[in-house]
Length: 384
Image 1 (spheres, rainbow, N blue to C red):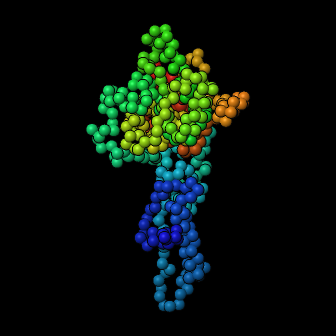
Image 2: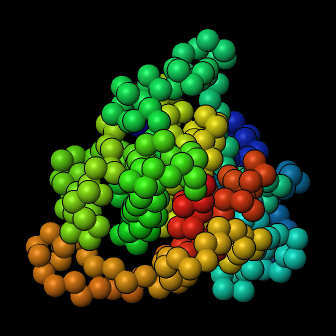
Image 3: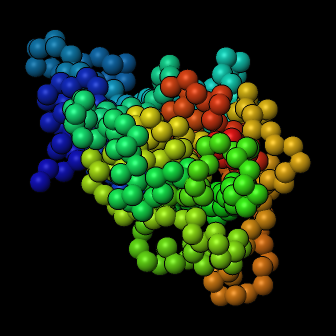
């Protein structure tokens, strides 16, 4: 096995001009370690040059040869699509590739965001390269062959049958989040359940009153479709919902098992809307949902042009910035609800990718919201 120094020496021998790190740095990274070797080798070359040449740069060799010390041409280093952040040094990466939403310029009046509370660029030592739309790329060509490939749902009847297979009512409005459960923070989950409780209450009220007006898309109680991650995860969420939202709301949750990629994509087509996780957005999964024709609701602090969307006067929704919440530990243990005040921040790149994806397909102004109040209202409006 070659050491990082030996690998970089091979790179120099091959005369590569640009190295692109697709892994990023998250504590351990062989690629980043190899790239960091450049600085060591550059220093070694400078020391060799100083020993061979005089202080004025003249050649001190007395062998009659007037050739200069051989120059070493080091490649340029670029970070792209790896760990979403800066490595904190310009000696490892020369450039990082982003877009104006995930890393907004300090003074840019052409974007639809207010940057006064972020100043994200100050954290980056690398020079930044901005893609015109979205820095995040993905391809489904490896699994999507085209018409008749069995992945894209072609009609409503096929969609209904697939819903039954996954335990979903064929007529229900399905809110979906198949992101990793660790991305779902307590504030976001409670926001989802409040919106879901509201629309389900409206449905049952309409059924009891035999009133067909108000929510024409609701022909069955709406549900929240989540990805299962072990029995404990499901049990904890069910305990929380029973404690805070009532026994009936437990029926509003449907869980799906982890599936291989083709099945994962196909079943996404059963959802009506995908719910992004504000603290750590859906990246690849966000691309999957949009590719399968499922719209996604996301949060981005400071995002403009969404302030008037989702108005529901007279209703009580989450406060725009502060949400009182209890911890799962207190709920499950039966302790008194003490509550915490939590603000979901979106000042890190990982929490800004959802808005970037939606902007790239031209629907950010309709589906990206500057606070959880707007996010929650949008969930309700989805079924109106």
